[in-house]
Amino acid sequence: MARRRTSNDTLSKLLRETQDMVGKLVQENRSLRAQNLRLSRQADQLADGWDQIKKLARSAPRAKGRGRS
Image (tube, rainbow, N blue to C red; front, top):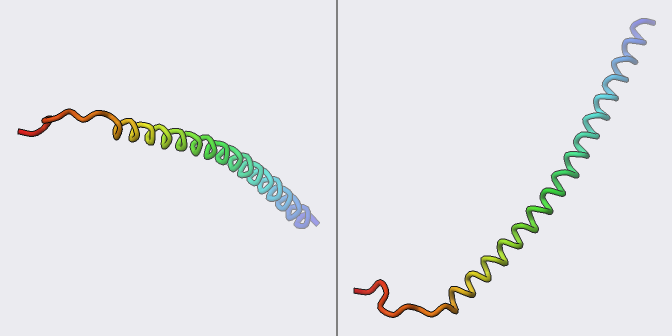
């Protein structure tokens, strides 16, 4: 009977560890999704900023004779 109890204890311990690991993975997944959303928004803002810079650069007056010998 001692062997049966040891087996149950081992299974209980394995179950607890598995549940803990799954809980940590779920929490990490939530955290990474939130971080991904923040980074995505930042990337969109940076892309918009670069588009504005390109528009300004295209509309800026060009200096004549600059860089020509």
